[in-house]
Image (cartoon, rainbow, N blue to C red; front, side):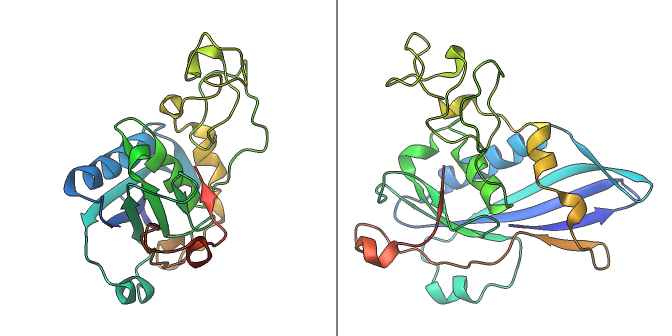
Length: 229
């Protein structure tokens, strides 16, 4: 989720998001790594957008903060569209990171998914802006996979976990480290549809879900429709 703003004099279209991490595995280093990955990858395309007769450079401004002991009430009462809340733990049901739907502002990250260059945070951020996984998950012959392709996608051998393995076998699917934010990903955000008031708009919507540690809650306590990475 993010706050969008048009800066006419600078010809900038800025989407601002604030990442707030909490949980037993959250720390300053991983919080900064998440922030840096999202900002770097989503700004890489240097895509532009036309509003009226003016061209604007799309810029993602990502900040982050560790709030290890944040309360459930603070999350539930949030009204700032920039705030995105992610619990980080060493264990997650399903052994995967996820967010709480398309166009959301909360989720649960598995620590082992967050190694440097994993692209997990950038992928899940795409979900918070409203992007789903592509429907066709066999993109052999199409080169570098876009950021929203999930694990298990069939790709050219060089982008697999193990390039020597036949496609579809263990090791023969996309290694997430090869994902990139492409111009098509920016286009799929359909930012032209945003409704601006005084040059400002909201990308996504509030879910404001406070997640409990999965080691302390049963599946019935944590199940909800989610989008996995």
